[in-house]
Image (cartoon, rainbow, N blue to C red; front, side, top):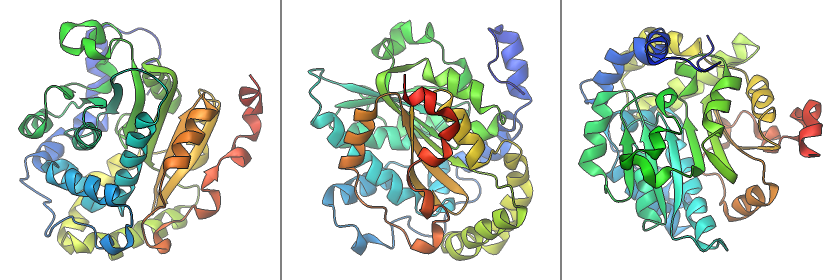
Length: 342
């Protein structure tokens, strides 16, 4: 189902959204977001703390955990080493704006249906307000956690789907801070809950990106080989998640949610193909079990400056299944070389 093909009226959009896993699973998400189920059994603090040499990454890590709501805590406990990854990216983005030659007093981040805005709030706080954030989420319970922790001067929440974010919305008094768009956009495993139509999904959020901006995509990917997909799931479910969840909790989620979630997943090649039709440059930053994180932009200098400030990945090597492809995605973008030549 195409989420945003042509202009669509409000009633039509509401109907389309109701058919998606994002809305069909709303009861499950509400239960997770209120802490009624699937609560991590122990502290989320990384067990790799001694391997993080950068004190700023440790500070970000601590800030992220301290402000995390129930659903985001569940996410951190479910995706192997995403906590460590978000911390290194958040520090690099802070340093990027700190060394920017741009004389503006603040920069902006849009989090696409990103739970209770935990990472956006952490980034706003860590950067001392140099980066301000807007988070969308159609899950009402996420707003409760957001308001409990947010600094309203630095972070805002839109209690609807990303597909209800429009240029006219950003011109309203409440959101006018973001009228000119965003320097950074982060999609955190949200698109898979709507459909496989990455082309129109990416087109929708790119309209809000400022020239030279960076967009991050963290997605759980499908695989052309079902056995390989299961092999990557196995290390997540049998090596990482038992730190936080019982075998019954892991089984419940697999049966109740993951099958519906999988219907919206795309392969790495499909995602890169969609990204490369909208951006000149795509870079694979991180891989863990079936998850991958990309950064994309039309500005090569901006990507290179960001990468120069990005510290090392912190996670056991056994969880990285796309290590050979980490870095420049030139080999996967061969069919789109004309974009890089524009």
